Amino acid sequence: SQESPQHALLAEGWKAQVVIEIASNMQSKLPAAWQGEAKGQLGKATKKTPLSEVLLKEIDCMHATLTNVHQDLITLLQATQDGRTPDGACKELLDGLFDARTPAAWKAVSWDIPMLGEWLSLLFQSNEQLHKWNLTKPKAFWLPGLFYPSALFLAVQQEGCVSLGASLEQMKLQVQAVGSRGQLPNEENLTEGAA
View (tube, one colour):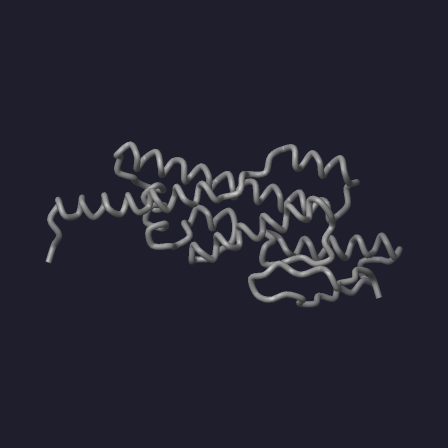
């Protein structure tokens, strides 16, 4: 059986109202995009090291992701509140939020996680990790929350080379799992250094 045009319009209107509530709620809870001051503080507080360069790259990626998400939500809210029928990327975002799927545009600038709730959780935890890292170098890193974990591994090895006066070929990187899935690591009982 085929829906009548009126029934389809009512269904789309209801769907838009649900998504407006979801998008408004998300917009109010999302962290703000990183501003230039945070990166400026990092640049003044520390000399350039491989790890500080990785942090700057991670902050750039987080800033781009948060900016993209905020802008998409604003565009969607404006389109639905103005009574316009969303099309293209806006329609994809509306459908994604309604179905609790991560929009393709968001996955393209971050992590390829299909479920929106899991993607948002990763976004919040990753942003928290970067804020802590921006204040002080951690002893442990939550790898799923990084955009480029392989860059972190290389930076740790490079800093080890400098501190030990060794070549990269002489270095051995040992990684130890210290936390549970989906949790930031607890650093209280961790030590750092070369053995």
